[in-house]
Image 1 (cartoon, rainbow, N blue to C red):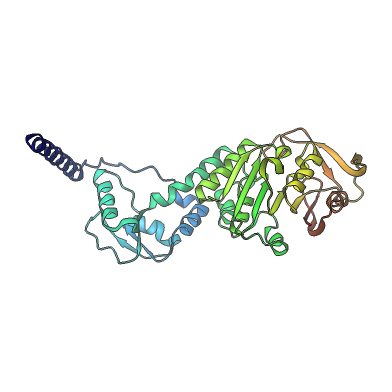
Image 2 (cartoon, rainbow, N blue to C red):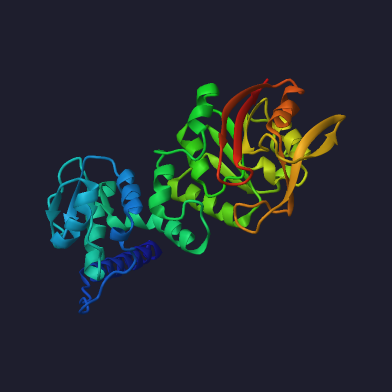
Length: 359
């Protein structure tokens, strides 16, 4: 009995000390130094695309709390009302609304106010930095790596699902993507991947051999919470049914002409799915070509030397095909062809061709 009482006394002593320490932390007020600012945030006014991504993250209705200068910064692009506020922990929070604190904390007392408001009101309280910081890896990546869409203002509409990189909308008319399991070759900078995600694919496996493109797409996946996709660093010549299994669709846009062994890639596509989308540069009528033979069939191709940039293949030699011969590879194996696009282009061979093959 004495041992039990002794233990209870010790526990109470520790609890009392802990409570007192907790109180001391809560009431501690380190004075804000003159001119001190919180520099964790980028200058949002410089990036309209970032503003749009932030606004898309919020669900209406919500209200803003902050100083008048801060309110004026965010009120315009968030298109909501705001209440002038100066770190009063006893602010009356409107019932049922999400509250965004748009003034940045600059001292211990500010952080304690935020913590107390969250304790009282839970997930209804959000700070502006919690909304903005998840997007800053895109700004960092675009400053360090080359993108086809070079600024966050240019790429934001694709990440938001307002524009499509390639004819994904045309593809889904002949082959609805919603609920499908898809393998994508060459996700590039994630803008094309975003289109597949926004069209409702159930699962997406992305194959990428260039590390910088892998990183760009990985950043987009994490920033936007694309939990149904997996990005794999692998050579597309290795990506077949043995390694990855079967899919509802093999999506090969802007990549077939980067294969050093093109028939290996084309056979891989057939092994992966009965539905295949291919898009890429092809030979224009009248262009010079060479003939290569595969399994007794002749194919008109043009070998070329790859460049050095992030849009190039990893290996030095790749091949453009004549479009008739490229589609014949699939029709001879039982596929029906639907041409989605055949147009002039200022890059590559100056002719871009897209088709859907199905059997």
